[in-house]
Image (cartoon, rainbow, N blue to C red; front, side, top):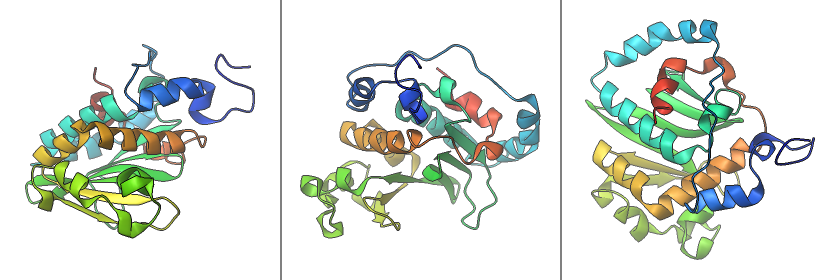
Length: 220
C-alpha cells in the first residue's frame, strides 16, 4: 500500500489524498515535493539541440517565463511526477507548430505558440469551470469573466474541443497570459482539469519530454 492510497490507486492518488488535492486546487495549501529528480541523461541529450533552437527564437524568454509560472502554479508535486505523469515538449512536430506543449495522460494541458515576436497560449480546461452556474452548455460561457482575465477582452477567445466538459481558451500576449494565470478562479479551473488527467495514470508522452525545458518549469 502506498502512503496515501491503495495498491490500485492510479496517477497522483498514489501520492496525494483526495482532501490534499481538493485543498491544493482551492489554493488552501502548498504541497511538499521531493528534492530528488530522476533524470534520463539520454533523454536530456535527445532534445538538447531542439532546446537550443528554441532559445534562438525571439519568443524564448517569454516562453521560459510562462513555463515557470505554469509549473509553479498548475502542476502539483512536479518533481515527483516529472515525465511519468506530466511532460513538456520542445518544438513538437505537430501541424499547429507550437513552441512548447505540456501534456498529462493522453491530454494536452497547455500550449504556447509564436504570435509575431510575441506569444499566445492555449489552455484546455473543464467547460463547467468557465460557465455561469457551472453549466455544461456551451452557450453559458461566462464571457464577462473571461474578458476580465486578460489585459484586454479581445485578447481572449475560446473553442469547444470534442469531448464532454472540455473547453479551450486562447490568450494572446504575455501580459494577458500572466493576468490569466494570476486570476484565482482561472487558476482553480486549470488545477482541477490538470488533476483530472494527472489522476488517469501514466503519461503517454514520456518520450517527448524535454528536460532542458523542465529545468525552467521546475525552477523554484
